[in-house]
Image (cartoon, rainbow, N blue to C red):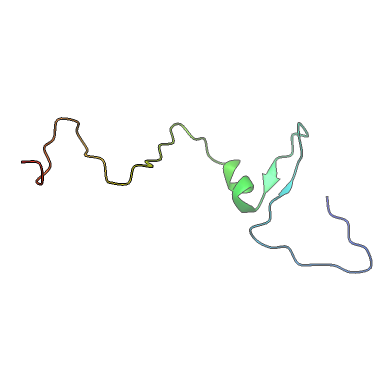
Length: 64
């Protein structure tokens, strides 16, 4: 919920709010709110300084 004392303040669109723990309510707004509607199956992040080839057996032009 929201509590204002002597004034009200606008919400920032990126500030999520909503349920906490096992309340069953969930989150709204922001990245946390978006997470309520998606399910990550696989996340891959390449941290190598150069691009990786699509196929392991592929020969790059600079190696040929």
